[in-house]
Image (cartoon, rainbow, N blue to C red; front, top):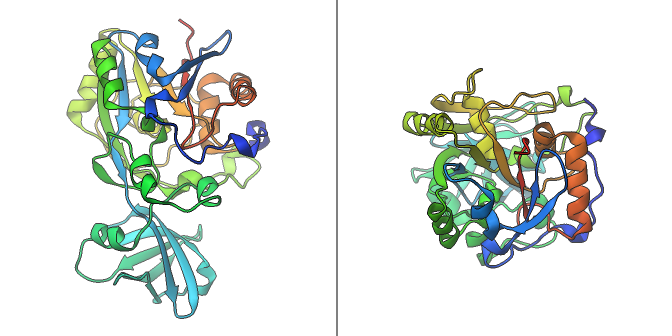
Length: 345
Protein backbone atom coordinates (compact mmCIF):
# COMPACT_ATOMS: atom_id res chain seq x y z
CA UNK A 1 0.00 0.00 0.00
CA UNK A 2 1.36 3.42 -0.94
CA UNK A 3 2.55 5.51 2.01
CA UNK A 4 1.34 8.72 0.33
CA UNK A 5 -2.25 7.62 1.09
CA UNK A 6 -1.53 8.42 4.74
CA UNK A 7 -0.29 11.97 4.16
CA UNK A 8 -2.03 15.17 5.21
CA UNK A 9 -1.10 18.82 5.76
CA UNK A 10 -0.81 19.94 9.38
CA UNK A 11 -0.22 23.62 10.21
CA UNK A 12 2.77 23.82 12.59
CA UNK A 13 0.76 25.91 15.05
CA UNK A 14 -1.49 22.89 15.69
CA UNK A 15 1.43 20.99 17.33
CA UNK A 16 1.10 21.19 21.12
CA UNK A 17 4.33 22.05 22.94
CA UNK A 18 2.76 21.82 26.42
CA UNK A 19 -0.22 19.89 27.78
CA UNK A 20 -3.43 21.56 28.88
CA UNK A 21 -4.08 21.84 32.60
CA UNK A 22 -5.76 20.05 34.22
CA UNK A 23 -5.03 16.99 32.10
CA UNK A 24 -8.64 15.86 31.76
CA UNK A 25 -9.73 19.20 30.25
CA UNK A 26 -8.24 18.18 26.88
CA UNK A 27 -10.62 18.04 23.93
CA UNK A 28 -11.75 14.69 22.59
CA UNK A 29 -13.04 13.98 19.08
CA UNK A 30 -15.42 11.03 18.99
CA UNK A 31 -15.31 9.16 15.69
CA UNK A 32 -17.97 6.46 15.19
CA UNK A 33 -17.83 4.05 12.29
CA UNK A 34 -20.32 6.11 10.27
CA UNK A 35 -21.98 9.49 10.48
CA UNK A 36 -20.58 12.74 11.77
CA UNK A 37 -17.78 13.65 14.13
CA UNK A 38 -18.56 14.75 17.68
CA UNK A 39 -16.63 17.25 19.82
CA UNK A 40 -16.31 16.47 23.53
CA UNK A 41 -13.71 16.74 26.29
CA UNK A 42 -11.98 13.92 28.13
CA UNK A 43 -14.23 14.59 31.12
CA UNK A 44 -17.19 13.37 29.04
CA UNK A 45 -15.69 9.89 28.75
CA UNK A 46 -17.76 8.29 31.57
CA UNK A 47 -20.96 9.21 29.70
CA UNK A 48 -19.65 7.94 26.37
CA UNK A 49 -18.74 4.44 27.53
CA UNK A 50 -21.02 1.67 28.78
CA UNK A 51 -21.22 0.04 32.17
CA UNK A 52 -19.10 -3.08 31.92
CA UNK A 53 -16.60 -1.65 29.44
CA UNK A 54 -12.92 -1.87 30.40
CA UNK A 55 -10.15 0.60 29.61
CA UNK A 56 -6.72 -0.97 29.09
CA UNK A 57 -3.75 1.17 30.10
CA UNK A 58 -0.01 0.81 29.60
CA UNK A 59 1.83 1.08 32.92
CA UNK A 60 5.29 1.64 31.43
CA UNK A 61 7.35 4.51 32.86
CA UNK A 62 9.50 6.81 30.74
CA UNK A 63 13.14 6.80 31.72
CA UNK A 64 15.57 9.72 31.11
CA UNK A 65 16.87 8.04 27.97
CA UNK A 66 18.35 11.06 26.14
CA UNK A 67 22.13 11.32 26.60
CA UNK A 68 24.72 13.83 25.37
CA UNK A 69 28.39 12.90 25.42
CA UNK A 70 31.77 12.92 23.73
CA UNK A 71 34.07 10.44 22.09
CA UNK A 72 37.31 12.39 22.15
CA UNK A 73 36.45 15.71 20.48
CA UNK A 74 33.39 14.35 18.71
CA UNK A 75 29.99 15.16 20.19
CA UNK A 76 27.78 12.08 20.41
CA UNK A 77 24.05 12.03 21.18
CA UNK A 78 22.26 8.83 22.11
CA UNK A 79 18.59 7.98 22.55
CA UNK A 80 18.16 4.61 24.21
CA UNK A 81 15.65 2.48 22.36
CA UNK A 82 15.42 -1.03 23.80
CA UNK A 83 16.99 -2.85 26.71
CA UNK A 84 19.12 -5.87 25.75
CA UNK A 85 20.24 -6.95 29.22
CA UNK A 86 21.20 -5.45 32.58
CA UNK A 87 23.97 -3.24 31.16
CA UNK A 88 23.31 -3.09 27.42
CA UNK A 89 20.84 -0.96 25.50
CA UNK A 90 20.19 -0.55 21.81
CA UNK A 91 20.38 3.17 21.01
CA UNK A 92 19.91 5.54 18.11
CA UNK A 93 23.05 7.64 17.88
CA UNK A 94 23.46 11.14 16.55
CA UNK A 95 26.81 11.71 14.81
CA UNK A 96 27.18 7.94 14.75
CA UNK A 97 29.64 8.11 11.82
CA UNK A 98 32.23 9.36 14.31
CA UNK A 99 31.77 6.24 16.40
CA UNK A 100 33.61 2.94 15.98
CA UNK A 101 33.25 -0.42 17.67
CA UNK A 102 35.15 -0.42 20.94
CA UNK A 103 34.99 3.37 21.42
CA UNK A 104 34.10 4.71 24.85
CA UNK A 105 31.60 7.56 25.07
CA UNK A 106 31.69 9.86 28.10
CA UNK A 107 28.19 11.10 28.92
CA UNK A 108 29.31 13.15 31.92
CA UNK A 109 28.38 12.76 35.61
CA UNK A 110 30.58 9.68 35.78
CA UNK A 111 28.55 7.82 33.14
CA UNK A 112 30.42 6.06 30.33
CA UNK A 113 29.49 3.41 27.79
CA UNK A 114 31.29 1.29 25.21
CA UNK A 115 30.01 1.19 21.63
CA UNK A 116 29.90 -2.56 21.11
CA UNK A 117 28.22 -3.11 17.76
CA UNK A 118 26.48 -1.22 14.99
CA UNK A 119 23.22 -2.61 13.60
CA UNK A 120 21.88 -2.57 10.04
CA UNK A 121 19.42 0.22 10.88
CA UNK A 122 22.27 2.47 12.07
CA UNK A 123 21.58 2.00 15.78
CA UNK A 124 24.26 0.86 18.23
CA UNK A 125 24.56 -1.47 21.19
CA UNK A 126 25.87 0.56 24.12
CA UNK A 127 27.30 -1.23 27.16
CA UNK A 128 27.30 0.98 30.27
CA UNK A 129 30.42 0.65 32.40
CA UNK A 130 30.58 0.28 36.17
CA UNK A 131 28.54 -1.56 38.77
CA UNK A 132 25.67 0.85 39.41
CA UNK A 133 22.30 -0.05 37.86
CA UNK A 134 21.83 1.67 34.51
CA UNK A 135 18.65 3.32 35.83
CA UNK A 136 20.74 5.20 38.42
CA UNK A 137 23.22 6.27 35.75
CA UNK A 138 20.40 7.61 33.59
CA UNK A 139 18.89 9.53 36.49
CA UNK A 140 22.28 11.19 36.86
CA UNK A 141 23.14 11.95 33.23
CA UNK A 142 20.00 11.51 31.15
CA UNK A 143 17.22 13.84 30.10
CA UNK A 144 13.54 13.20 29.41
CA UNK A 145 13.34 12.08 25.76
CA UNK A 146 10.78 14.50 24.36
CA UNK A 147 9.48 13.71 20.86
CA UNK A 148 11.49 15.34 18.05
CA UNK A 149 8.66 17.69 17.08
CA UNK A 150 8.79 19.18 20.60
CA UNK A 151 12.53 18.88 21.24
CA UNK A 152 13.27 20.78 18.02
CA UNK A 153 11.36 23.77 19.40
CA UNK A 154 12.30 23.76 23.09
CA UNK A 155 14.45 21.89 25.59
CA UNK A 156 13.09 19.47 28.15
CA UNK A 157 12.66 21.07 31.57
CA UNK A 158 11.49 20.24 35.08
CA UNK A 159 7.82 20.37 34.10
CA UNK A 160 8.33 17.55 31.61
CA UNK A 161 9.45 15.23 34.41
CA UNK A 162 5.80 15.21 35.49
CA UNK A 163 3.97 16.13 32.29
CA UNK A 164 5.50 13.31 30.23
CA UNK A 165 4.54 10.54 32.67
CA UNK A 166 1.09 9.00 33.01
CA UNK A 167 -0.45 8.43 36.44
CA UNK A 168 -0.19 4.69 35.71
CA UNK A 169 3.60 4.72 35.19
CA UNK A 170 5.09 2.11 37.51
CA UNK A 171 7.46 -0.02 35.39
CA UNK A 172 10.67 1.61 34.13
CA UNK A 173 11.66 1.01 30.53
CA UNK A 174 9.95 3.29 28.02
CA UNK A 175 11.68 6.03 26.05
CA UNK A 176 8.38 7.54 24.91
CA UNK A 177 5.16 7.99 26.85
CA UNK A 178 1.90 6.16 26.06
CA UNK A 179 0.42 9.60 25.49
CA UNK A 180 -3.31 8.81 25.34
CA UNK A 181 -3.13 8.05 29.07
CA UNK A 182 -1.63 11.47 29.86
CA UNK A 183 -5.20 12.84 29.97
CA UNK A 184 -6.24 10.81 33.00
CA UNK A 185 -6.43 12.16 36.55
CA UNK A 186 -7.47 10.56 39.84
CA UNK A 187 -10.77 12.45 39.63
CA UNK A 188 -11.39 11.06 36.13
CA UNK A 189 -10.67 7.51 37.30
CA UNK A 190 -13.15 8.01 40.15
CA UNK A 191 -15.85 9.18 37.74
CA UNK A 192 -15.23 6.21 35.44
CA UNK A 193 -15.36 3.74 38.31
CA UNK A 194 -18.63 5.29 39.51
CA UNK A 195 -20.04 4.78 36.00
CA UNK A 196 -19.15 1.08 36.12
CA UNK A 197 -16.15 1.32 33.80
CA UNK A 198 -13.32 -1.07 34.65
CA UNK A 199 -9.55 -0.77 34.29
CA UNK A 200 -6.78 -3.14 33.35
CA UNK A 201 -3.02 -2.62 32.99
CA UNK A 202 -0.39 -4.20 30.77
CA UNK A 203 3.20 -3.25 30.00
CA UNK A 204 4.74 -2.28 26.68
CA UNK A 205 8.06 -0.46 26.90
CA UNK A 206 7.74 2.05 24.07
CA UNK A 207 10.91 2.47 22.01
CA UNK A 208 12.30 5.45 20.14
CA UNK A 209 11.41 3.68 16.91
CA UNK A 210 7.87 4.97 17.39
CA UNK A 211 9.10 8.37 16.12
CA UNK A 212 11.05 7.09 13.12
CA UNK A 213 9.62 8.31 9.81
CA UNK A 214 8.48 5.83 7.20
CA UNK A 215 11.05 6.37 4.45
CA UNK A 216 9.82 3.80 1.93
CA UNK A 217 7.10 4.32 -0.67
CA UNK A 218 5.24 1.09 0.02
CA UNK A 219 4.18 -0.06 3.51
CA UNK A 220 5.27 -3.61 2.68
CA UNK A 221 8.89 -2.41 2.66
CA UNK A 222 8.81 -0.83 6.12
CA UNK A 223 10.40 -2.71 9.04
CA UNK A 224 9.07 -2.07 12.53
CA UNK A 225 11.37 -2.01 15.54
CA UNK A 226 10.60 -4.54 18.25
CA UNK A 227 9.37 -3.52 21.69
CA UNK A 228 9.08 -5.65 24.84
CA UNK A 229 5.69 -6.23 26.41
CA UNK A 230 3.86 -8.37 28.95
CA UNK A 231 0.28 -9.39 29.69
CA UNK A 232 0.04 -11.63 32.74
CA UNK A 233 -2.23 -14.70 32.88
CA UNK A 234 -4.61 -13.11 35.40
CA UNK A 235 -4.99 -9.94 33.32
CA UNK A 236 -5.62 -11.98 30.17
CA UNK A 237 -8.32 -13.98 31.94
CA UNK A 238 -10.02 -10.85 33.25
CA UNK A 239 -10.03 -9.26 29.79
CA UNK A 240 -11.54 -12.34 28.18
CA UNK A 241 -14.25 -12.33 30.86
CA UNK A 242 -15.16 -8.75 29.90
CA UNK A 243 -16.28 -9.80 26.44
CA UNK A 244 -17.99 -12.91 27.78
CA UNK A 245 -20.13 -10.58 29.90
CA UNK A 246 -20.92 -8.37 26.89
CA UNK A 247 -18.51 -5.57 27.74
CA UNK A 248 -16.10 -3.87 25.39
CA UNK A 249 -12.32 -3.64 25.54
CA UNK A 250 -11.17 -0.07 24.89
CA UNK A 251 -7.42 0.30 24.39
CA UNK A 252 -5.97 3.51 25.81
CA UNK A 253 -3.30 4.29 23.26
CA UNK A 254 -1.81 2.50 20.30
CA UNK A 255 0.78 0.83 22.55
CA UNK A 256 -1.93 -0.98 24.51
CA UNK A 257 -3.69 -1.89 21.27
CA UNK A 258 -0.56 -3.29 19.63
CA UNK A 259 0.22 -5.51 22.61
CA UNK A 260 -3.36 -6.75 22.90
CA UNK A 261 -3.43 -7.63 19.22
CA UNK A 262 -0.05 -9.34 19.53
CA UNK A 263 -1.42 -11.51 22.33
CA UNK A 264 -4.79 -12.41 20.74
CA UNK A 265 -5.44 -15.70 19.01
CA UNK A 266 -7.49 -16.19 15.83
CA UNK A 267 -10.72 -16.34 17.86
CA UNK A 268 -10.00 -13.05 19.59
CA UNK A 269 -9.09 -14.53 22.96
CA UNK A 270 -6.24 -12.74 24.70
CA UNK A 271 -3.46 -15.07 25.77
CA UNK A 272 -0.70 -14.40 28.31
CA UNK A 273 2.22 -12.76 26.54
CA UNK A 274 5.79 -11.88 27.42
CA UNK A 275 8.41 -10.94 24.86
CA UNK A 276 9.04 -8.73 21.85
CA UNK A 277 6.45 -7.57 19.39
CA UNK A 278 7.05 -5.81 16.08
CA UNK A 279 3.45 -5.96 14.89
CA UNK A 280 2.78 -3.50 12.04
CA UNK A 281 -0.91 -2.82 11.52
CA UNK A 282 -2.00 -1.49 8.13
CA UNK A 283 -5.37 -1.44 6.30
CA UNK A 284 -6.67 -4.93 5.70
CA UNK A 285 -5.69 -6.09 9.20
CA UNK A 286 -8.46 -7.91 11.08
CA UNK A 287 -8.70 -6.61 14.65
CA UNK A 288 -9.32 -9.35 17.18
CA UNK A 289 -8.74 -8.04 20.69
CA UNK A 290 -10.25 -4.55 20.94
CA UNK A 291 -13.59 -2.83 20.41
CA UNK A 292 -12.46 0.79 20.55
CA UNK A 293 -9.41 3.01 20.89
CA UNK A 294 -8.61 6.23 22.73
CA UNK A 295 -5.61 7.81 21.01
CA UNK A 296 -4.01 11.18 20.40
CA UNK A 297 -3.58 12.64 16.91
CA UNK A 298 -0.64 11.21 14.98
CA UNK A 299 1.94 12.38 12.46
CA UNK A 300 1.24 12.16 8.73
CA UNK A 301 2.75 9.13 6.98
CA UNK A 302 3.43 7.51 10.36
CA UNK A 303 2.85 3.90 11.34
CA UNK A 304 0.44 5.12 14.02
CA UNK A 305 -1.73 7.02 11.55
CA UNK A 306 -1.70 3.86 9.44
CA UNK A 307 -2.93 1.95 12.48
CA UNK A 308 -5.94 4.22 13.11
CA UNK A 309 -6.74 4.13 9.38
CA UNK A 310 -6.69 0.34 9.62
CA UNK A 311 -9.24 0.48 12.42
CA UNK A 312 -11.58 3.09 10.91
CA UNK A 313 -10.75 3.32 7.21
CA UNK A 314 -8.44 5.76 5.41
CA UNK A 315 -11.20 8.05 4.14
CA UNK A 316 -12.85 8.13 7.55
CA UNK A 317 -9.67 9.11 9.39
CA UNK A 318 -8.61 11.64 6.77
CA UNK A 319 -12.01 13.25 7.32
CA UNK A 320 -11.65 13.13 11.10
CA UNK A 321 -8.22 14.75 10.96
CA UNK A 322 -9.48 17.44 8.59
CA UNK A 323 -12.27 18.16 11.10
CA UNK A 324 -9.73 18.31 13.96
CA UNK A 325 -7.46 20.71 12.08
CA UNK A 326 -10.35 22.95 11.05
CA UNK A 327 -11.62 23.05 14.64
CA UNK A 328 -8.18 23.79 16.08
CA UNK A 329 -7.52 20.60 17.98
CA UNK A 330 -4.03 20.30 19.44
CA UNK A 331 -1.91 17.53 17.89
CA UNK A 332 0.61 14.91 18.98
CA UNK A 333 1.97 13.85 22.38
CA UNK A 334 0.90 16.87 24.44
CA UNK A 335 -2.21 17.47 22.36
CA UNK A 336 -5.88 16.50 22.42
CA UNK A 337 -7.28 13.02 21.88
CA UNK A 338 -9.80 11.01 19.90
CA UNK A 339 -12.14 8.15 20.76
CA UNK A 340 -12.56 5.72 17.88
CA UNK A 341 -15.36 3.18 17.56
CA UNK A 342 -15.22 1.07 14.39
CA UNK A 343 -18.82 -0.04 15.00
CA UNK A 344 -21.48 2.65 15.18
CA UNK A 345 -23.79 1.04 17.74
